[in-house]
Image 1 (cartoon, rainbow, N blue to C red):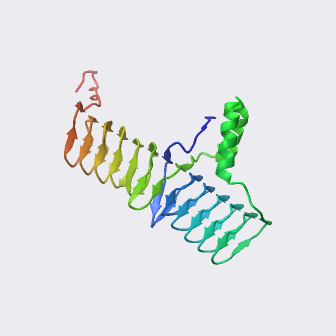
Image 2: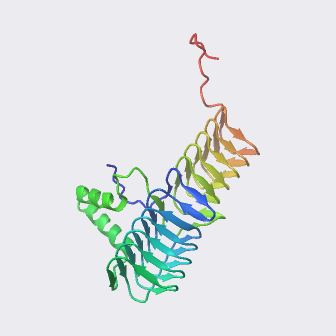
Image 3: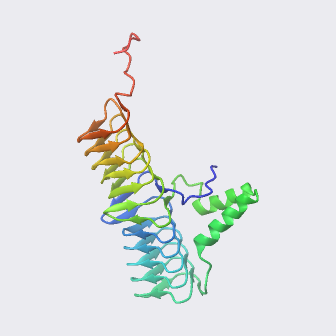
Amino acid sequence: MSLRPDPLSELAIPAGTVVEEHDLVVDGDVLVGGQSTIEFGVRGRNVVAGERTRFGGHIEAEGDCRLDTWCTVADDVLVGGDAYLGERVEIDGRLVVGGDLDIGDDVQIAEGFEASGWIVIRNPMPTIVFLFMYLTHLLRIGEDDAAGELVEELFDEDDESDPLTVPQGATVSDDAWRVSAPARIGRDCRLHGNIRAESVTVDEETEIFGSLRARGDIDVAAGTVVHGDVTTRSGTVTVADGARVWGDISCEHLELARDAVVDGTIRARGEVQTGVMPSEPDPDGSPQ
């Protein structure tokens, strides 16, 4: 098991993530840092959000849903498992919970709620704050095994799906995904919006309808298509074999594979390497 002591240190979009008619759809968990804005509706397994996170659409969680204090949701919240709502959470639609409901003070639900299990009204500690303060403490005192067990419980590591993680203070919308941290996008994703991050890594066979912009390096893997410009202030842009950029590239250094396609202007202040993929040898062993 790989230990992830700070899962909110980057924007991590797991393989197979798609945006469907203003819904962000993932197979695994969704973990959102506090003071973030998610303009999409969200559909995932477990959904956890830090305090003062705003959702511009509905939430559908197959498992549990945890919303910390001052979170707002512009539509319904549908939960297959248990729900935990911190104080002063606002839901502009209805709340339907398949399991137990743990609800804090002064929670407002515009269209009412129903729960199949127990309903407890109290003032729960903010979930994100407690979990990650506790995890940090375990790592500090050398309790790696206990920290690993906590991570397994948080992310259900027996499941093959990686979580979607959004760092604190991020904004995610049709227009742009803005984070002040690295962004890592998995394979076979289909995303709408410009990506703005510290650095950007895009895995194979992903399609992005927007531009990529970073302070550091940008890596575009084989078979990926970017419908927009690729820009970095001081990093290296790497475009792998079979990748396509339908826009301009502006960077410090550029590594462009032999079969990569760029439909725009290339501006590089430093070194430019083209055709970096080695040639295939002929059957007799000699290079082509």
